[in-house]
Amino acid sequence: MADFFKWEYVVSFFPKILSALPITLLIVVVASMIGMSLGLLIAFLRIEKVPVLSQISRVFVSFIRGTPILVQLFLVFYGLPTLFESLGSLNKIDYVYITYGLNTAAFFSEIFRSSILSVPASQKEAAASIGLTKLQTYRRVILPQAVRIALPATGTMIVNLLQDTSLAFSLGVIDVIGKVRALGALTYHSLEGYFIAALIFIVLSILLEQVFAWLGRRYQFQSKKVAQPKKMVHFQPLMKPEKKLPKIVR
Image (cartoon, rainbow, N blue to C red; front, side, top):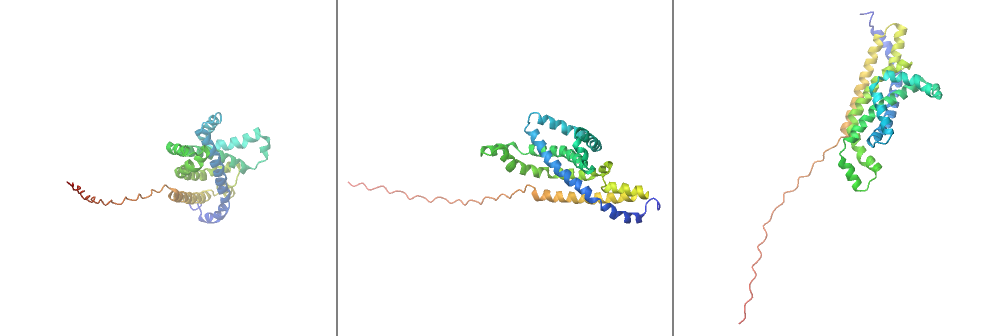
């Protein structure tokens, strides 16, 4: 066991593996931005049932959700340059951005679509009754409520995305796992590197969960306390004085 796992390798590997962390975080940030933007667009297309585009979006979401991300990674890496020769000059990291962006877009579209549909229909009717356009209704009424509903699932999605970046090394991208494999091939000690990678991913996942938990508490619907009506003091009405009959003058 002493030869199989050595703490001195853990100490020496740690700064080298940590230096590749910005690449992993950059993949998460870029893929999240692409996924949220494209996912929101797909959600709108499906909710509004735009002809043709709605059907294409449904097929796209079904394909992405039904295939492993590793397969998608190779399809994008080998397929896009075949279809579009101009994309052959892209770097490997660019193909990773495209793949993870498309993958997260499919999952984000379902998160956003279910969140928007969960907003009561009476909200739309009320907005239409005061003369708001459809765009204004979404921007001012529907989306602010849908964002609060989608926060927990969005946090889970981004944590899963962080863990899925471990497959980016398949294209030769030197992220955290890519650096672990490179050090393992050089020193024949891989276990120490994977131990460090596990610690890094655990810490980052916990931090992300805490951030989204704070956001959930910050933007949750706060039920306002309804002021209790003051007790009405009932006064007995004053007795009206009896009208004196006028004297009859004889």
